[in-house]
Length: 356
Image 1 (cartoon, rainbow, N blue to C red):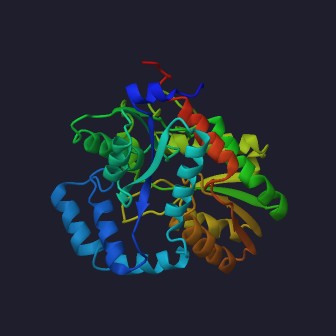
Image 2: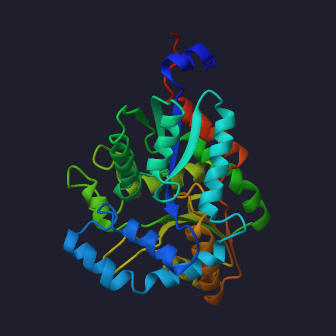
Image 3: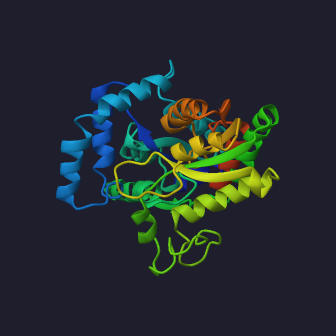
């Protein structure tokens, strides 16, 4: 794409790019984690129950105990640079900005800081009339992509001069994403020589999946309902996850018996997508798997759910069940291949260069 001239920028404003991710507490301490969890779990797309029930569950069950436990977990992953999700996101935004000099690029979090409102204001103040919104969630879920897109539209509507928004759709099978993960994994797999590879995705309640099916007749109605993307499951999180698994497996030339998929991070007692990662890790060890590699391809940046939940807790469970070595395959973070891949995805959605 030819670089826009200064006159073009003056007449039309530079395009903006808003990279959005889920969010992180401001500090790994109980008050900050409680504030973050309150914002996160107050979202009706996350806890999709009636308002009274959501408030009761949040205030009477979750917030009295969970913030302290979560703060302890966050302290396990916090570094001198701060939250991994945040500093990896900032590094990605900086690198993408260097790769796309004709655009203004910034990072925003759906919950916590930097907020979506702050990100839009930054782009507005930079003169960006047209903004590419890039939700960094490869697979669509109403509780992640849907919530972030809704928040962007809501905050953008508060500006007198509303920006014109272009939203990047889910990229679960995009070659740039798939090949970036494959490139990160190859040296890890070559060194470990695993007996098995587990693809672990953030879980969602089963009802979120069935609600995404406009026909009401497909999702979770048959064991192979996720095998092929159809009209009915085109926005199904589970189907997207399975497509990602197959895409990366194909890129790495894995045999069908070499890998499986599972879902982590469930909350509460209602059924979530199965199989559950914490159960699966133990079962694999009991079946004789000694060296296990774990992908987490629902995250483009390492965070609590990858570093602590898989790299620490799952490792401990695996060894206690008889396994010897569990290795977390790093996420994409701001690796060179992903920076170029993300920039390529963004460029597809940038407005065409115009002259006055």
